[in-house]
Length: 110
Image (cartoon, rainbow, N blue to C red; front, side):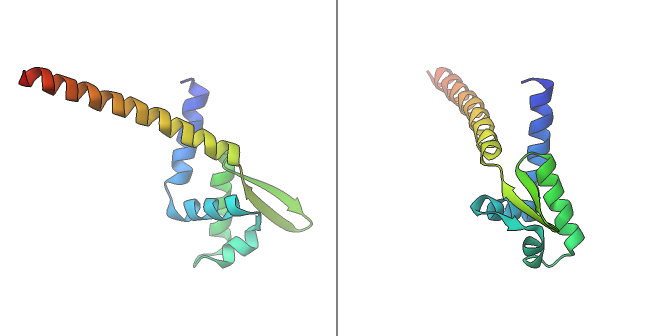
């Protein structure tokens, strides 16, 4: 992976490490929401929800646009697919390692 890919992965994992951000991402992937409407769903300040949205936006998982005075947020499906592809690649590495361990254990038995 390039340095840029590593930085992007760090941003994704940081953004997805928080359950509120994961929930916000699920909501905006289902459809566009105003940040105000998102904030109404959580027991925290509007500013706190804005910060969560900003983390998701910096990670490239969410896109914001303005409509008048309202900030609208929607999920970036392509970025989420990229996260999934990265996790699938990591799973492949892990499965390969487990398979090699299984092979070594079988050889040791024989």
